[in-house]
Picture 1 (spheres, one colour):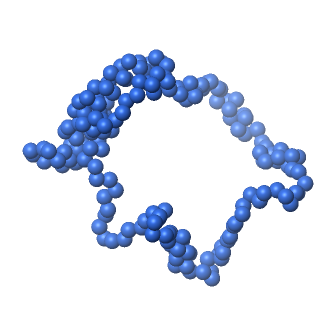
Picture 2 (cartoon, rainbow, N blue to C red):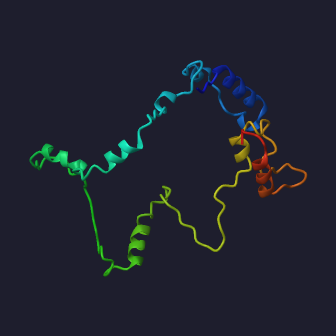
Picture 3 (cartoon, rainbow, N blue to C red):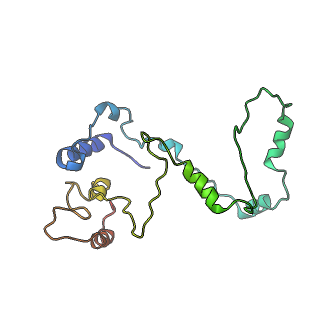
Length: 185
């Protein structure tokens, strides 16, 4: 079984906060640490799956036993007479031109884009960029160093490190890290 020793985790976090600039501003709370047991993985008891071996023949017989009624058939006996005072399940529902004969795709796209227009003081739900060049989704040289503090405990030496005297490409360093015989990465 897995064991997490709270004192070791606390020692590691305090060491990171003292020695790694990426963790220097993180507030560590002993009160939060005391919420966990001394030797457990939080929530582990909800994640245990017990598998009982079954015979293949018995499973095959169950799966091929015949047609079974639909699972909702048992709900039919529980249906109550209609009451107009009930709240509707769907307030608004619309289907327009399900055959896609009368309305062009551009009309649907325009309607969807109209829903994206929002007042100037709010941010849109979706932003669509257009152009011939790809847009970098995430440009953060500290990302890998922060995700793998056991590989970069001092917060230095990560991918595309700006302070390197000799630049190392992302691909070269990724290949190097993937070839490491280190289970932390």
